[in-house]
Structure formats: C-alpha cells, structure tokens
Image 1 (tube, each protein chain N blue to C red):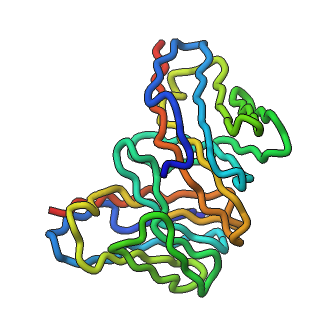
Image 2: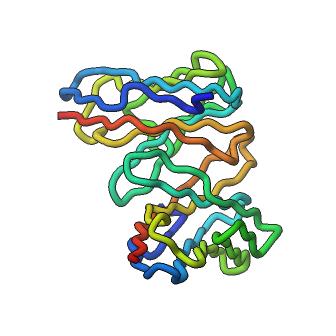
Length: 111
Length: 114
C-alpha cells in the first residue's frame, strides 16, 4: 500500500516548456487535489476532483490544467511554464474530502 | 484575501515545554478545522482535527482548542520534544460544495531545543 505517489520528484524546465505532473493513489479515495507550496505562503489549492469524472478550480488555477484519468490518477499539466510556477507541488487524496493524505511532492524549477 | 491567519511564524520552545500555535478564520461557513504537520522534504500529514460542535479535542500530547464566537482555534503541544520540530499548518474547510476545499494558514516553524 503505497498511499499517494507523485512523479517526478524533481524537474527543471525552461520558460515556455510544458510538462505533466503525475499523481496516483491506491486507497480507493474519491477526491483528489493539487496544491502548490511556496515559502511563507502555506499550501494553495490549484484544482481538485471531488469524484471520478469531475474537476473544479481552486484558489490559483491560472496556467494549469488537470485530468482525472480514472479513480486512481489525477494529473496536473503546465502548458507553458513560467518562472512564477517554480514551486513544490503536492497531490492529495481523500475518501470524503475532509482527511486528506498528501504525496511526497514534486519540486519544480522554471528557469 | 487571507481567510485563515496563523501565528506565530516561528516558535522556539524548550524540551518539555508547551508549544501554542494560533489561527483565526473569517468564513463562518467553515465546519472542519484540521492541523497538519510537515517535516522537511515531506508532504504534510494530518495531526488532529476538530469540528465546531466541540470546544476541545485531545489526542495524546496534542490538543485543539476551538472558540466559535471568536472564530479562533489553537494547537497546544504538551511536553514538547525535539522530534516535534516541524512546520505546522492550520486549515479550515466547509463541506457545502460537496467536497472539502482546505484553506491553509501560512505555517509555523516549530523548533524544540533540548
């Protein structure tokens, strides 16, 4: 039982490049989330998926897209990366939305 | 607009002391208040959570105190240990939209010195 896994762990991009961050959970949770964490800012919600087949914007969705591929997987895509998207990205899952289980994070640097 | 304000930003406590972290919220619709603990290089992990129908919840050395009228809640860590050194985040959410959207405070870095 791996919980929430994220790939890659680290990534360096150049401005304008695109990439997809992958997230998978093996706990049969309904809800999944993407957050970004910046120094001194706490965690901010980018997008979430309350259940398979649905996605909704969070607090900071601009510049990102998501796909809930199936119940296990929720990916985050940066179409044209910008330096302002340099951050640590966390995926989380939850059975009902309250208790959220976080993955280990992806550290992204955009040059 | 910051909906959850957390203080202090950093806290140094001696081993065996009490660590206290405070949070204040604005949205009266919030009905779930968790605390998360994060160690360097790791994802946050749920520590303890409370709902507004109780004023206090205790789990081991960790206690949440909740004041609904003041829209404030706090985390107390009794007998603080060096292993408690981490960053702590309070959060708040409401379930009205069918899924909880957590709004986090900015975090408190706790250092427990021997």
